[in-house]
Amino acid sequence: MVTAIVGTQWGDEGKGRVSYFETRNANVVVRCTGGNNAGHTVVSNGQKYALHLLPSSIINPSVMSVIGTGVVINPESLISEIRLLSERGVEITPKNLLISNRAHVILPIHVSKDKAEEVLKVKFGLSKVGTTGRGIGPAYEDVASRYGIHMYDLLGDFETLSKKIKFVAYMNNFILGLANMNHYPDKECEQIAREYLEYGEYLKAFISDTKPFFYDHLDKESSIVLEGAQAAFLDVEQGRPPFSTASHPTASGSCTGAGLGPLFVNEVIGVMKAYTSRVGEGPFPTEQKNEIGNKIMKLGHEYGTTTGRPRRCGWLDLVMIKDAVKINSCTCLALNHLDTIGKLSEIKVCIGYKYHGKVINYVPVDHENCEPIYKTFCGNWSADGITKFDHLPEKAKRYIDFIEEYTGVTVVYIGTGPDNEKTIVR
Ligand code: GDP
Ligand code: IMO
Ligand code: MG
Image (cartoon, rainbow, N blue to C red):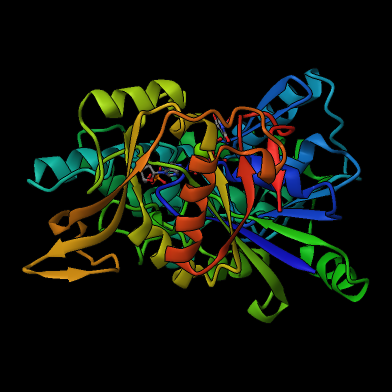
């Protein structure tokens, strides 16, 4: 049984909490794409964890956590995440963590180039992306150019690794120069190679080929969860160019990033919030740059888990959700922050776009030209901490019924508070 968990908006829908909730029945949880641009929050037994590279299952040592081939790993960040969690008593050993030897490596050169690319875009009169500055885009650029570094390189010899890093620097230094940023000369590349071999030494017990592991679990019919990062509208092809991340954070991207074919996937859970948020630049038709947006931001504590940036907030956009259901072939939805949205007196939901003189119900590439058509719901309900659907106020039930009717899929999980325990399962 393979279940994929994906974001249906612009990220931060609560994928981490849904993934952690799924660990109740899972044997294996896999992070498939992205890197430490992600921030997945899990609140369980009064403890709050912010995870960036490790799957949410890491908190539950009886589940095997895997970092798949499609992930871009900053090994320094990964090691500090492992150390921080270990200091908090989370057990992390090769018995519950496996890192694909094919996963990609983020170098300091990529972090510098991420910043350089943003500077150069603005200098050229183009819009910046508003990246997390973690080197994600440049690392994936090198993957596609086939000179990127892989985790297995960190287990090799100094000569080979330093030659490969020097080549990465050679191919990227020109761009850094254009942005008046420091080059990476050979000496510094050698220093990076030494440092990265040390990271390899620290991580080597966790690194291996994930293929025999997965094939064995498929044979045993284990329960495998693919924990997606980012979201459908941050996908490098489905988002509004250039305001996306550099990977494919969709169900099909998760398959590629884990190394499993799409027909193994039985369920795709699309995670959504009862409203919409976005960090970084890019169009956001239902954004509320006003008191309502501020209120949602405060009520939902909408500050980035990774960067601490306040998230832009606005009404739920069901056109996006329906589109994401198709992009991902979602079989069901998980709806978070039902408690948060109920605190507003009047709630709006976007059910169509006015677009170049027509009405449409999909997300076009020029998303900024969409004017939302709203349906209004009554708020002022309290869903806080409710764990049974029947106990929800009628007004909240009507909101959920409409989401199901509009999208054509069932809402199977409902978040009524940040804690894992505050979940309704249907
Ligand atoms: P992810 O990146 O998709 O895993 O989501 P994040 O962890 O970045 O952001 C989700 C935020 O919403 C976190 O602060 C969660 O603790 C919080 N959250 C998730 N579900 C709920 C919910 O049902 N109610 C409330 N109040 N907070 C929630
Ligand atoms: P989770 O998994 C929200 C956004 C960045 C920026 C754009 C590109 O926590 O939902 P990048 O650094 O990836 O090149 O930035 O993508 N972004 C996210 N926004 N949640 C995330 O992850 C994100 N990962 C990337 O803010 O707009
Ligand atoms: Mg997040």
